Image 1: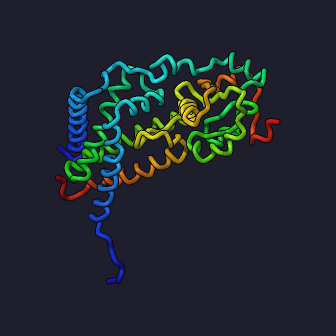
Image 2: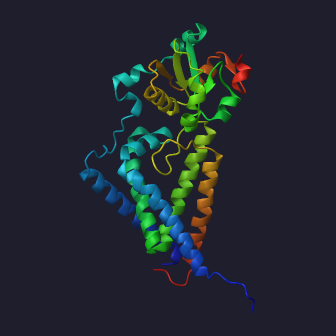
Length: 164
Length: 147
């Protein structure tokens, strides 16, 4: 057996060992995962579901100027395009930038966080963070940027000042 | 003879071995501790069908830890280096696919924090690891002794 073949056999043995350890450990540990049935995080509880706002409702609040949108994506993506009037609060920098943003958040409006993609949870994380900070009226627009763009709702590019 | 201090080849090899091995241990252990969080991280990539998400979240951290352990211990070097390379290639492919599709999701690469959104730098880092792991594999195939 040459060295490459030997390496492949070793790699296969390492993989087999990992599979065996993983399955045994998962079987005996408390709270082990179900092997084939994955529970998507969004659907776990009802209160969580109620925080999600559908696009038509978000668009209606936007039209009535009753909503303040917060973009949870990185600032570079915000600059490329965002919901008109939205403020940029990237989740990665949420704690540092929060104080600057907090004073711009009107108390009488619904705060709607969004990011992009069905599985993007930056908006959910940001909404959790705002709730912890004492904001009660926070909703999440799942897959917000894609939906907004697809429906050709008002958009803007560049910094916040360009939105006015 | 020159006065240059030469770092022996086996020192390079050991450093690469400990670096990649340590890296995989560091990446794998927290994922074993919190499989649910890692399953969510796998799910966010939207690459695997739902029925493979949990299985991946259960097995992959162990593959990382065992590979890392073998590398650190210096056992079955060629096989462990090969496994490390394959994992890094798969990670690179998943990261590129994510970036191309424009998903802004957390990397889930190391600890299950939500601080690192996938960007070009994440891919560059993976490629840098691949260079070291590639050297490790090539060197362990050509070394005179291999345990």
